[in-house]
Image (cartoon, rainbow, N blue to C red; front, side, top):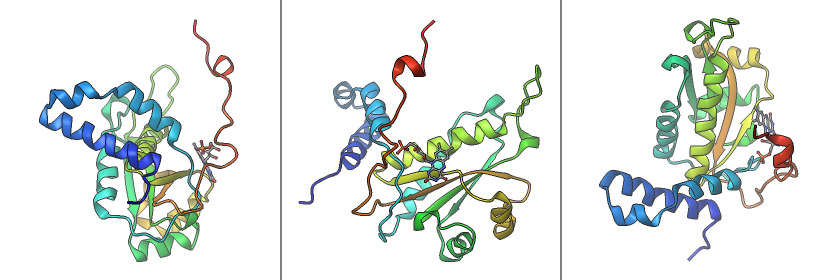
Length: 204
Ligand SMILES: Cc1cc2nc3c(=O)[nH]c(=O)nc-3n(C[C@H](O)[C@H](O)[C@H](O)COP(=O)(O)O)c2cc1C
């Protein structure tokens, strides 16, 4: 039997967790440490920049979209729309303006400022923050399913708008490329480079 990757093992654990949640099987729940599971997922996730040709099961795309839908948004305004670019025609359109690491699925996250909550004190519009939470859900759910993924922020929004007229009225705030990691995929040099806890955070 092929050796399972760490992410595959994590995905198995999540399936048990989901089953336990839906069937109320106490014995499963008692075996799980939910806190550790998320910390392990957060540590195992890395930006994947090399994807295999393996097709992505549409069920996984739908699962990712459904988890994205659960993201919290300010005042529950949900000023976000996601376009899952997976079909040959849509991927061809995207590739005219961005290679997106040739991933089989690219989630485009759009924010609609005029539907978002606005903070009364300083008029700060919450659309981008809400969209970032949705994008994070997509990234982490993809990792939880054992899929490689990367947040792409470097793209020309005008060109994306040009090839995807259906996104009119939304600002595309992130592209998340998702697929099965290629054999040579792995964390890049910056993955381990995190500030020390004392520099990153202050407990007051
Ligand atoms: C908002 C945002 C934008 C990013 N844009 C890009 C990008 O355009 N191209 C790229 O290769 N990586 C991009 N990344 C990935 C980061 O470079 C990566 O998360 C960081 O170096 C840490 O590595 P890790 O994700 O493997 O832990 C982006 C990440 C974030 C959160």
